[in-house]
Amino acid sequence: MAHTKSLGTTKNARDSEAKRLGVKKQDGQPIRPGEIILRQRGSKYVAGKNVKVGGDDTIYSMKSGKVKFRSSKKTRFDGSTRYIKIVDVITV
Image (tube, rainbow, N blue to C red; front, side, top):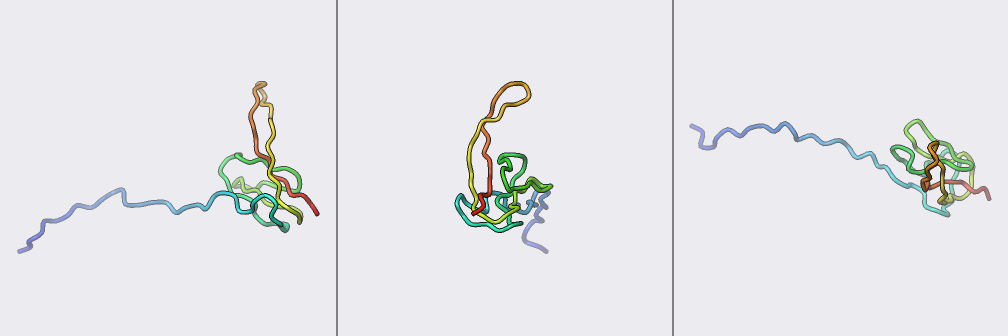
């Protein structure tokens, strides 16, 4: 006869895999065309010059140069303003 009682199972023992979001190239770092600058969900950062946005909001370089981050104000359609972070690639 068993000496330990039967233990129940758990239904919440699953966890999703980390998505590795965030900035991949810092301000001033050299970059080549096609390299990922940052991975994000939504438009926390906005694409600037020589930069494009992928289907999953990933920002990547279109030309060789150096990464530059800057801040600016953007006016919304209702007249309110918000601060945005813009990512550029400055060609050398």
